[in-house]
Image (cartoon, rainbow, N blue to C red):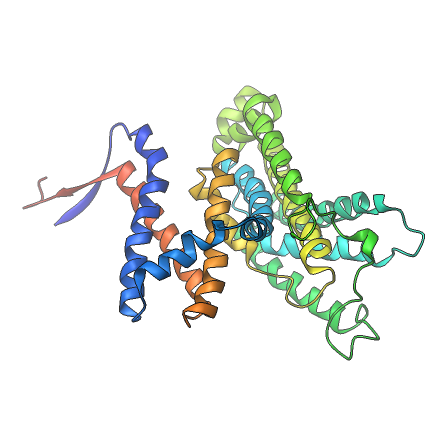
Amino acid sequence: MLKLESRPQPSKWMSYASPVLALAITVVVGVILFWALGKDPVKGLQVFFVEPLRSAYALSELSVKAVPLVLIGLGLAVCFRANVWNIGAEGQFILGALAGGWVAMQAGPDTSRWVVLPILLAGMLGGMVWSGIVALLRDRFNASEILVSLMLVYVADMLLSWLVYGPWKDPNGYNFPQTITFAAVTKIPRLFDGLRINIGALIALGAVGLMWAFLFRTYRGFAMQVGGLAPAAARYAGFSSRAALWTALLVSGGMAGLAGALEATGPLGQLTPYVPAGYGFAAIIVAYVGRLHPVGIVFSSILMSMFYIGGELAQSRLGLPKALTGVFQGLLLFALLACDTLILYRIRSTKGGRA
């Protein structure tokens, strides 16, 4: 009989190496999967790991996918480090898109280019309001933040559908469920002509630096992590677990809302029922593959973006289902969890009740 036994001292080196090992396992399983589907494994791996890096245009498209994942992943890392399980970043992403989109729709012919700043601030505020509901219910009624945040995703999705099918529907949009196309001054500025990479990439990199400083170089970041992980010890030290809860959820919601506003006024340029792209859920994997560290999240976001683009290319070039993206994401998470389990525990064989 096999049993898991806690290791007296988990390997710190292996904890950093496990994401790389998990990626290697994912690639091996992917090769087997391509072979089972009757496709050339070399071509299959090429569309996932080579094509997204082949040219400046490909790198630009990679950044479009990576920016929201970086921002949402940073916010989730703050939550998870504080032992707050925010599973509803997708809903906060949608609310950020709605808030930022509403500001963008108010733009007129004389609107300044600086309207981009209120759009992004509105997006952050929208995400914070949505995550604030989770914090309030957890704080006042001890409701599970997992269930509340997850259920609010569906509420946000229904709110988006109601608005684009109803009050915000473009009267000149041939009855399609969409808002008006946002004015040119509201669009997120691009960094290079002919490429879709925009200032969101710079904002994401700036957020990485700020989040690193907040988590590892500020009293508030330290207090938040202690307050979430050890409430009794935090109270003894004078830290507030309530403050940790509110700080983590508001930061996470604000980052997801910012990502939503950037997406709505950047690549999309209007609101449609297809604003939800699954970034909020994929960012959970991003945060854990990045070991809840801001720098690690950048690399894991790039990897997850390659899965997104690779899935689209596999559909168009190899005739494989688009769901292959989700398969690779799930494989990566499963492999990472398996590696982490073996870092913390070792498998022992028992015979006759004795190890």
